[in-house]
Length: 223
Image (cartoon, rainbow, N blue to C red; front, top):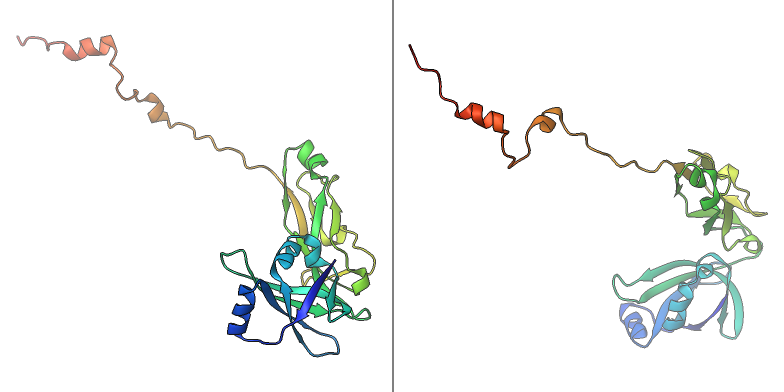
């Protein structure tokens, strides 16, 4: 994917606010052997690009000053409640240097797995994006995982997934973390009535005729 950026001459809170009012988004490009570069991007074009998953997890072509360079989206700041991008950060990419990035996990086939189809279990997707390390040329847009063989009460761990060539997972000390688990659906709890509640007459019920007669009987006369 590619996008067009322009040089941003001024920086600061006031300058950035005026830039946003004009329909532009301030940003910065850093990394590599050159100094950080202040940029501005058309807000509408950026807003629509950010809705695409690939814009967040793939190498982008940035057109700037008549030249093209490869960058990776590193950070996006959104307005708390307005549909507005406040700032974006991009990192320059060196083809010979490994990079780290988070890529989405695309799971499929769970509806045909024995856990779901035969046991009516639920599939819990614990990890939806994975941090990886690789060369820019090996960066995948996403990682596909087939869950069609997931068994009852089974778990899928990182070592069970075949990563693309040249890609290594970054786990920050976790040993073979769980990515997916099959769990039983929560059973509906049915409260059992208490024995005394079952024996008690319903509210507003009339007493039996025999009981009423016994209650109205006169005591025997004293001799």
